[in-house]
Image (tube, rainbow over all chains, first blue to last red; front, side, top):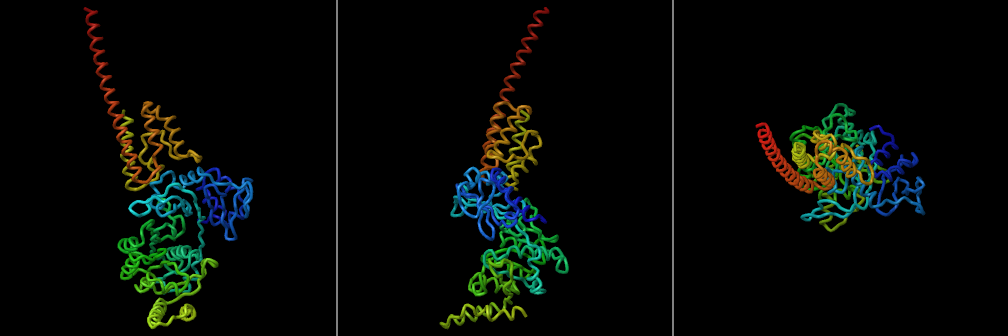
Amino acid sequence: MNQSKTERFDSAAEGVCLRLRKRLFALPPVLKAHAQEIRLRVGRPVSVCCPEGTYFLCDSGKAAPFLSAGMTEASQEDVQETFQILCENSVYSHENEIRNGYITMRGGHRAGLCGTAVLGDGAVTGMRDVSSICLRVARELPGCADELLDRVGKSLEKGLLLAGPPASGKTTILRDVARQLSGGMRGCFCKVCVVDERSEIAAAFRGVPQNDVGVCCDVLDGCPKSVGILMAVRSLSPRFIVCDELGGEAETRAVEQSLNAGVGVIASIHAGSAEELVRRRQASALLETGAFGSVALLSGAARPGKIAEIYRTGDLLAEAHRRAASDCGGQLCGVYGIAQALPARGKA
Amino acid sequence: MEKLEAFLRFLSAAKTEIRYSSLPVESVLRKHGGEFSFFPLSAEDGPDGWGKAWSEAVKAGAGNEGFSRKDIELLEGFGAGFGASDTQGQIAHFSLYENLVSAALEEAKKERDGKSKLYRMLGVCGGAAAAILLC
């Protein structure tokens, strides 16, 4: 868990086929340290994505930020071999993950899969002819939830909803929240249960969390949130339940039931702003359960992990109701109303 | 024949393991393949990966453990599909090979019975011939 950034990259590259792996290992440490993704696409150059841009692997063993002759292309065999390595030669063992388009690797890295979907009864049952693989290098940022936990303080026990757009750092913060609460870094060792439906928070591999989620943390891996929340309440007696990306009706019902069991729910949801959040029917339904005392809004992909604002749920709901009432009266409320009105109260 | 029976037991245990716990190939072999020293417990990386590792291990070690040439072909065919599909596909694959191994076992039993009759007859004839010579 204390692997350096280059070691993290190398451990992710272990999942790539032998031919390309050797070239990835040989990349300069500076590039490895910045790399966020390794991308393989059949018949196209292998690329390494960094925050500053994309680099393409060259036959010479180097990487270039532009396309030229002599680029290392991934063949069909390379992608197929990589898929087999990621599956540990056991496709059935990763069936549910493949159905959802990803495979979790040892080390907490995730491989996103792209190919031809196999349908059965109207649902995706598998994937064949894998044509591209996106290997996301896992990264932990211990301490990234410090600001959030300091600002929310004791209110955390009343539940916290973390809202933000994609790539704003929601999952990374949730992971650190779980680590700090269950690791005794916030006063006492709290019993935390992570309901990790897509193996993104703890990234369990063969039952062992690959990310540090603290000593008093139980992980329900691969379990649907709506089921896992109730399972945790019934059998694991947690003080906090942590889960990612709430949104479905069944999940809202599960959160509602946990509310009466004395459990604090810490969850995330997609929303670009407070206005977007209260406009979403499912988000409003979640807030109205009363399971979340506060809502923390993240800045966005440009500043991952940065808290833009913390709102009291009651204030958000009141604003939503006021907006709804004014909309009924034929008046449109300014979309920036909440953002301007609430920060001062949130900070209080 | 004992080895074929042991392989049939392995197929049954592994099928249950895959259906119930979805353990990966390597763990299934470790857990249930103790009777077969030639089972590969890890695959070398490479274009042929697991399939090659299995095939080479079977060719190199199955003969020494009492499997016939026909049985070895059966084992190779089994390894080619082990781990290559989803749970339903694996259960179908295991069921197919349970049937094939059972049939091979039946054949081996018939062969053994036939041979034992032959040896018994040879023994009786030999005894009678010895008795006639001695008289």
